Image (cartoon, rainbow, N blue to C red; front, side, top):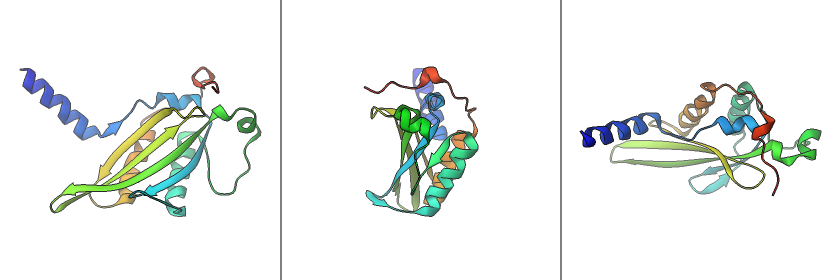
Length: 151
């Protein structure tokens, strides 16, 4: 019976992908799309940044990238913002490729506020879209009690 329970838990984890509790994102108003890391190397891919920008906007967060001027509230309190890094990596075995997209949200103190790490079998773009779709399943509502204080 224990073996069956363990297999069931692992199966659920495999199906869902790795997705940390994202309710902490409710403590922030802004996300700076910081870097896109493609197989270990930083790249400046405007298409991916725009996809992320639109998804965060639909979620309710103000996304920033490129040449932007900090909003006054973010300038006054940098802890209202997160830095997002998207890591792309490839895996899989044999003839079945796997493309991974890992979104890491880091707060003003350098602490991880959330992670979404999912894979797709056909492309990095589809892996990114799949990861961002996790935001659609959440309800964003800003809560100042969840905003960290700068250390």
